[in-house]
Image (cartoon, rainbow, N blue to C red; front, side, top):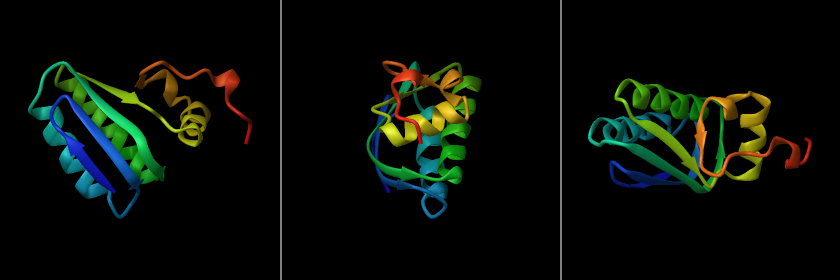
Length: 107
């Protein structure tokens, strides 16, 4: 997993899983704490995430809310969109462009 960017936009690539969760959490929390306004998390290059990775995203979402910021997901890959819809997290998280649940292929 790699994350690059600043306190306004981060680009995540690789795998966001149990092995990378601690590092990702640190980077996300630092970005949330050191900026203002929306924090955009570009997931275009993300290959996969597991439950731990999703937990990191949700933790950053909660932290951003406490800091009067908003975590905005951009470029969510289709397989991750399906997971967000299945868990109904697409209703909680800010997703740029939204997710059309009806247009996603069924798994």
